Image (cartoon, rainbow, N blue to C red; front, side):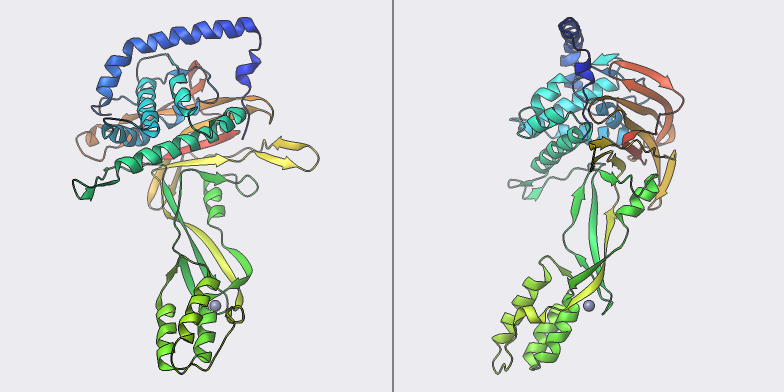
Length: 414
Ligand SMILES: [Zn+2]
């Protein structure tokens, strides 16, 4: 959470008044196009040219990152999503429509756009006041993802009339799944947690990583946990205590299952209850005593990779003497990095310039040109082109993005 007080630095009433006029001019410029754009919006994203100089965005509290996500992967998904929206719309769906409109504007010939309509819609969210205080681009990104997910679920929900759920072709490119695997160091048995976590941004931990590969390795780094109840060691122990044939059958059925969504103690309690009901049972065991605690290796792994990686570099830490401070440690970003048989290309960055109390966000965005050979196929591919630096309404071509102070990092694969 890094505050952006850039907007307030302008300070004086005069400047604010000027900003007001400016905002109005931009808005009316935008409104002239609205009818036309909104209509064509529902057609498709095919007409979009991702190789145009991006439009600047009037500072509305960290909306600058919108430029960084206006890349083919995300836009193609968003446009498919909004095509399914019709009739009475929910807040989440209105947010998606507004966002699609902004994505269209950012890849049009407009020089400057105003995202205040999007902010107005987001302000109806109960979490908004928190965001407003923080003025943080990562928080805003998360908030948008929450609404997109909601709209996606509403659209893909089970259709009673059709007796099936509607399915969109594309998935949110930021979406990825992580799973947890636990291996007991005593019995060597490993089992997966059934719980699949769905996430949109990866944490880039500056204390352990300087490159994206190191950040991914750190997320998937195995950790040792002591005093962990090993279900398999405990079940083997029960097998020695409860020896009736019917009891052994029950225990074996638990031993052969590999996925559990309850904690080991709850499962063991259930097993023992079941074992105690068997006729002829001689044993009465306290479930607590059946829990064998072991040293285990716990590993989170990425079960499904995203099409667009978004890394969130946590630069704010609480210092014992100085309170909240910003970490200025640089990150080193390769233009490409391979993972899971795919090549990912650095496509955008949001950098925070300043300290923990005030500062300003600058976005860097690379444009993409459609690979002509793929233009007729369903799976379009894109080639990387120019870099642009976007500081609010100012947009300028640049040779290299200023990557050191990256706060949000985006990599795409096509
Ligand atoms: Zn074990």
